[in-house]
Length: 158
Image (cartoon, rainbow, N blue to C red):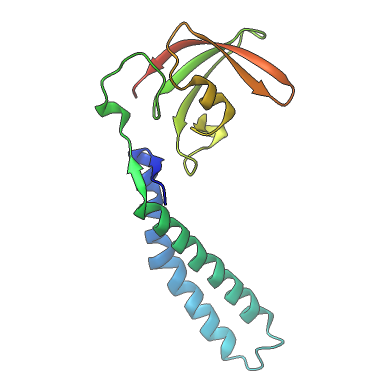
């Protein structure tokens, strides 16, 4: 399996999530299953069926996270000498040349991407267009509604 790029913050968030699932959610669901079993006939026991489904989800999520953590490549952009170029982990301020609106994105791994927090996946169309470019460059992002032109205002290692 290929290495999975991730920021140090993203890796820490996954470790916290897997610890929570193992130490809190797993024991809770085991108790729920035991309680539901004590009620008798399992074929018509909705609580038991729901608890077993939830257990499957929790175990699947734990396996997924542990698999990713086993293949993670942590990239701490703060330790990389700034070159002015957009790379994984940099924070990029862009100017939409059509609307004159500015937006700032941080380029992160897939598991960390959250548009509400202005974190975009390194594999997203915007990030793909930005990687390797520098402040002052104009990039064209191919979007479903047509091409969007952005000017890179700044690239920061935050």
